[in-house]
Amino acid sequence: MDISTVIEHIVRRFALRVELPSEAREKIASLAIKIRTLEPSTYLLREGQRPQRCAFIVDGFAYRQKLTPNGEREIVSILMPGEFIDVQNLYIEESDHDIQALTRITVAEIMIPALRDLAETYPAVNQALWIDALVEASIHREWLLNIGRRNAKTRMAHLLCEFCVRLKTSAVGATRAYDLPMTQEQLGDALGLTPVHVNRVLKALETDGLIVRRKRQVNVVDWPALRDAAEFNERYLHLELMRR
Amino acid sequence: MDISTVIEHIVRRFALRVELPSEAREKIASLAIKIRTLEPSTYLLREGQRPQRCAFIVDGFAYRQKLTPNGEREIVSILMPGEFIDVQNLYIEESDHDIQALTRITVAEIMIPALRDLAETYPAVNQALWIDALVEASIHREWLLNIGRRNAKTRMAHLLCEFCVRLKTSAVGATRAYDLPMTQEQLGDALGLTPVHVNRVLKALETDGLIVRRKRQVNVVDWPALRDAAEFNERYLHLELMRR
DNA sequence: CGGCCTGTTGAAACTGTTCAATTTGTGTGG
DNA sequence: CCACACAAATTGAACAGTTTCAACAGGCCG
Image (cartoon, rainbow over all chains, first blue to last red; front, side, top):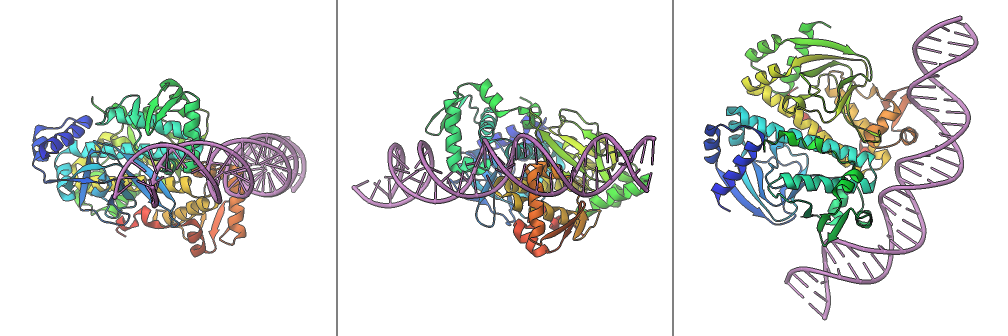
């Protein structure tokens, strides 16, 4: 993966959110960017650390997790290609959670002072970063509703719907069939369920004719039915802020 | 409540986060601010609406809620005096949740374009708003862990701890005894529990000698024990970003 | 081939829910 | 000051969803 392609990805991400002045594009192109490829389950950042760089996902998936003192885990975000991983760390010094690679992942790292400079110089860049952060907070809120108030089957259906829509919107561009890059244990950790129950719920969704599974690939057989079962309404993803 | 006092509150809020240039202070003082007092359970904003103004809480409490199609509710944030309610709406047009007054509440409303202007002119203001938004996202993540992975008693204890610490830090300044301005039903909605179970759990915490209740007043009898029972670690509140 | 991680299944146990009834508290009007 | 109405808190008993524990199957890699 060469630098100029990566820069193109980043510029395209900003342009998805805002009208990017050509001067800003040039400035982005001149940023010092470091490209790294990481194996699954590598930590990109640990709770309590003070990161120096801000990462952009060129390819692959990552997640944010938090742990209880006795080692129980909650996955609080899934991060997809074309997203900035830690806009947080532009203004917050100590990380409050871990970030881990879900799949093999390629990231482009930008020095935080450089990115802050860019945002302060170009309101458009600032705004694009704002929107990214605010949409993620909105997803957090929807997950709170999901985990707090919906039963296991609805919860799982909701996650599958979100995946489907976000993948379609992201750099991946999948449609109704996609590879769910997570184990059932990870799904459980994202939904506040045990892996055993995840298994049963997935089976139930399959028996109901909403999805079909082959290994980790998920095919949405009946999208309207799945969406209804999930009580899924994509408003919280704020796709209206995508200028495509 | 007169305007100049309110402006002082707002300036103090920014100054808590950043070094605020005196020029910015003057600009804030010249903002057109509208003060409103609202009765409990009044809606400040509804899902799907496009707000024109951004509100700052001068006095009283509010909360964010989301509803499932069949009317189940999840309270996803508690908002305290001295906080901005909808920094979201600076850059996101359609609200993804409701905001409702918890108690009688006084808010100061600023026109969104004026606040955006202010943020674009003064990086310090921009940064203060960023920090507010990022800390709230961090709280969302902690709540996800709380609801997803902790049992009812721990969850409740955690909420009580968070209240205690945030009140102390906020404009209220309470210590180990405070009025919990929520009904048990609202507590349940914030924790993903039924009101019946909230009642039992509160009783259990009292029997364990961690708290004492009189009406809605909560006294933390044994803070270290409550904190331990809650697995509470205040890192996620990012108090290090308070310059007091 | 063996080892290990992931997925699958069953049965029992438990946490939290549901439903329903009762008590307490608070404000209102007579 | 009492009577009444209404919301909130409290309690009990039955029930349901999810977890826990345990065992086994399948696939992948060294």
